[in-house]
Length: 86
Image (cartoon, rainbow, N blue to C red; front, side, top):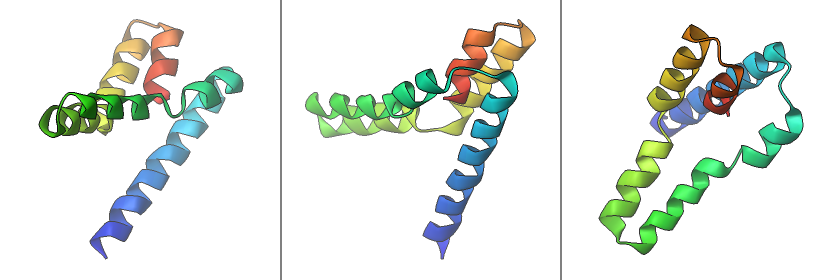
């Protein structure tokens, strides 16, 4: 049950990000090109499992993305908002 809630939460955040992305009318080509960019953090597993897990988890948290979006919105920098939403 817990796993379903986490997956549902991820789906809701993904849909909200897509909706916000569409409101800003950013490029969908860039969105799909960089959608899986955070998964490149798996390359850190080449160093060792501990470092790899920490880097992977850092890139897959919502707080970093939310902070990037907030900073972009505060300073009115669209590219920063776009990066945070992806």
